[in-house]
Every structure is written in C-alpha cells, then in structure tokens.
Image (tube, rainbow, N blue to C red; front, side, top):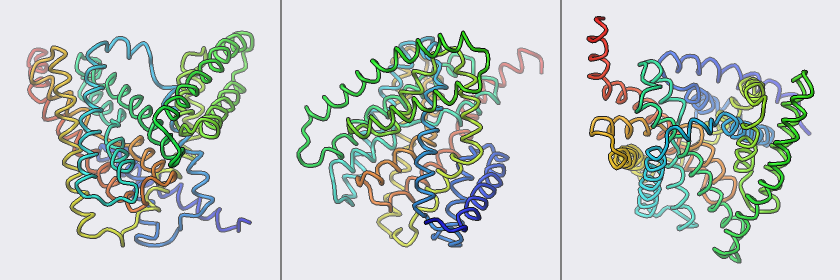
Length: 396
C-alpha cells in the first residue's frame, strides 16, 4: 500500500524537472536534459532524496507510452513524402552505420550476460535521431524549410520508425526465450502489424465519421487514448511486440484522423504536466554511479565517439548518394547526431526486458546529453557561410 510520501516525491520531481528544464532551455538544450539531471541529482547517485520506487516506475511506463503515441500522432506523412528518396536513403544509412558501430563497440568491450542481443541493442540505441533539437536549431537559423532542413526532418522521423521496427524484432527475441526462432519471432511481428491494420483502418474511419457528426471535441482524446492503450497491451501481451511500438503505431493511425492536431495538443498537456517529467526523471533515478568503473568510462567515451561519427558518415554518405553537394551532406550528417527521447526509451525497454543491466543507463544518459549539446553548435558552424551569404544578399 502506498504511503502519503509519494505525493511529496511527485511534487519534488515535477517542480525540479521543470526548473532544470527551463535552465537547460536557456542554453538552447532540450528540456529532456534538465529532467535527466533532476533525476540524477535527486536520486541515489547524489542526494538520495527520492528512490526509484515501483509507483514511479509504473507511472514512468505510462509516460513513455504517451510520449511514443504523441510522436506517432505528430508524424506528418505528407511531409515524409515530400522529403522523398533522399530522406529514405539517408535514414537507412543513418540507421545502418550506428547500428553496426554500436554493435562493434559493445562486442569489443564484451560486458554482457546476453552477448548477441545486448550488443545489437546497444546499436539500436544509437540509431534514433532527436528531431526536436535539430528542428529548433534550424528554425532559429531560418533553415528549417530549406532543402537541407526538409531532408533532415524527414530522415530523422524515418530513423525513429526504423529504430522502433528493429527494437520490436529484438524484444521479440528476448521475450521468446531460448525456444524462439527467427521465423516464429518475425511471424508474430508480422501478425501484430496485420492485426493493427485490421483494427486500425475501421477505427480510423469510424473515428473520422464520429468526429464529423459531433462538434464537441473533448471526448476524442479519450477514445484515442483507449485505442493507444489497447494496441500497446495486445502488442506486448499476445505478440511479444514492445508496448511502445504498439503505442507508436496507434499514434500513426490517429495522425490521419480529422482532429489529430487537437488530440496531440491534449496529450501534450497530459505529458507535460506529469508523465513525461516522471519518465525522464526515472532514468536519472536509475543511474548507478558506483558501477561506473574505468572500463565503463572507456566504454562511454568510445560509445560517444561512435555515436557522433556514425551519424555524420551514415547521414552524410546518404545525402551525397542522393545528389547533395559536400557541404550540404555534412550539414545533413551533423543534423542527425543528436540523440534524445527515443534513445532513452529504448534503453529503458532494454533494462525492463532483461537485455541490458541497469548500469547502462549512465553511459547512454551521458551520450544523450553530450550529443544534445554538440549538435546545435556544429550545425550552426556548418551553416555559417550560408547564413552570411543570405544576409549579404538582403543587405543586412
């Protein structure tokens, strides 16, 4: 039974994550970094004010489902189409290089009790690109709607989708145990997507018809939320698919409904008020400083270097193959460096499914923070000459 102390824990987490989030935003960093730091400072690693209780873990799990559902709803499929072939090539290479790089780094350090699955999982963590950090930087420079900006945005969204698909396969193997075969796991995943399609198409049509018939919008987010939880539940329960993958697919289905923008705004409020801060703070609360030995330090440094270089090489090569010049290709590669929400979400899923030990939270959190800081700086440098030329043409 819960004691009254959980109210104080929630109050401290919500206020501290927002305060540190505001501070990090002042330095043009995502508020996720502030929430991570809040959990780290308040947790057992430093002050020990708050422990990582089952109650916080449960709310954090709900929080990550909401985050992934919102991400799905926010995906603009038409924008992805406009990015075209270039975004697809960049996304594929931008996922392949980090996946291989992460796998090789984890294999070299060999710190695993489930070697193959864990090593692949480290690679999966490196695949995801933070859309928000790059978007904010490009928007500030007035380059978001340009050719490079559109391609980066499309490729980053596709990165996340490809990462979720790979995550689904890996967690499928983890859930199937020693009896699982490649065929059975893939079959279950295909079956889930088929079921999601069978359920999703009628839901989409009924939801749109209902939305047109009724002017009051307040109940629409409730139906959407119910659908999200339903897909997340059946995905993990019956098909071995990660609940966050089910939530993301539910979001994609809802994104094509009449009131998707309204639903997204309502979920943003729910996420912003409590669930999102709780999830990111819970990552910080789970970080184990005492297990951070010399080997883990070297692993973190190498992982950080690989995380940066594989995105620059993979994204840049993809851009070059798509017909962009050298400067534009470098800009695309740099724009793909930042990792954020999805990397933490995938790590959390790896720990909860027993693939990764909790000691991996610290290296991944450090990687997320450093890539979040580095990307805006490098991106601004890569666009410096372009911005100067634009100003000169305008006579500024």
